Length: 171
Image (cartoon, rainbow, N blue to C red; front, side, top):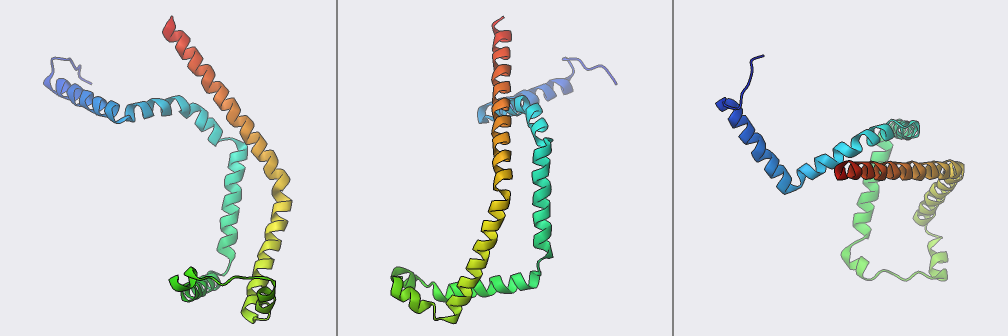
């Protein structure tokens, strides 16, 4: 590779362009952002490789796989009909004057087969949601506590790095 000197017009042009770019980046805050990213990058990469975070990613992939296994046509048809019915029933006029529901009107609505089916679906969903919550709550609480500890440690490390940087600058 050939030697480059500051007297070289190409080198001068490149330096001027780089300086203009740095000035624009400083004015827009991009340079500060890049400095912050550079400071946080090592900690962030180690956090991203944390086995617990990788496990969360694996669980999300599993959840997506379960959703893939559901019959897409069935879900599409159900959601399409749901949107159609909502558009038909929830008109602006009806939304302005929603009926009041009391114990008597609730009991009367229970006689409607559509309400019965809707409540059946809602109750099934609530049962599954409750069961899933019970099974996972202890694991989630432990994971949340560990995540809070990890974040606190990262904050402590960053504060220590900032103190070290200030002591280096002061000396």
